[in-house]
Length: 188
Ligand SMILES: CC(C)(COP(=O)(O)OP(=O)(O)OC[C@H]1O[C@@H](n2cnc3c(N)ncnc32)[C@H](O)[C@@H]1OP(=O)(O)O)[C@@H](O)C(=O)NCCC(=O)NCCS
Image 1 (cartoon, rainbow, N blue to C red):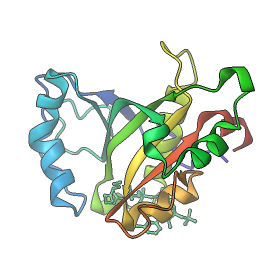
Image 2: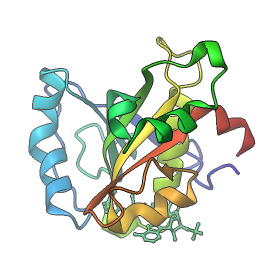
Image 3: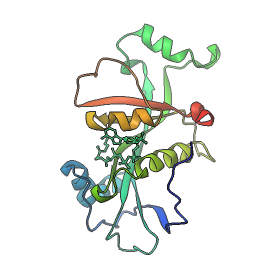
């Protein structure tokens, strides 16, 4: 299913934040996520730990009314993410026998948030769709999975968007490791 939001129709863009670029105001209702986009994201960018992208109006050149943001880093899914080897082997069954590895390449959504005034308009869903496509069309490296340490409150949102828990170990934790298999994209 395609997301409802049409960037061109609303004159919106998804833009990568440069090292020296800051966001003036943002409130998603979570102070850690707000602090990240307002103060920390340039440092993460400088240290090459993550890249942050913002969704905004095309003419908002000073990032004064950012609608949503997400940050991405390289990641992997490996044996150590599972309770035991049997579960990892079960996970690996999606691969041809000769392509079963000790770890599989992934990209991690470090943070993702939508401005409080814009929640519930499929913007989060649109961003997830964008991220999935970002790592399947003309990608520079192999990347099979998208991962996220999802806040408990946001888990239904990710499940609605095709993400699944990697294991049951973290079921009662404040965050839960979820993944999306990019080979499932065509089945959306
Ligand atoms: C979670 C968040 C990104 C969702 O963005 P959004 O644009 O409001 O979500 P969407 O409108 O695309 O919602 C998609 C679906 O998920 C559901 N959903 C969204 N947030 C949900 C939540 N917190 N709990 C339960 N369901 C939720 C919606 O009902 C919708 O389902 P529907 O299409 O069947 O109605 C946004 O609420 C947010 O920024 N939250 C605060 C920060 C946060 O928790 N970020 C995640 C960090 S891991």
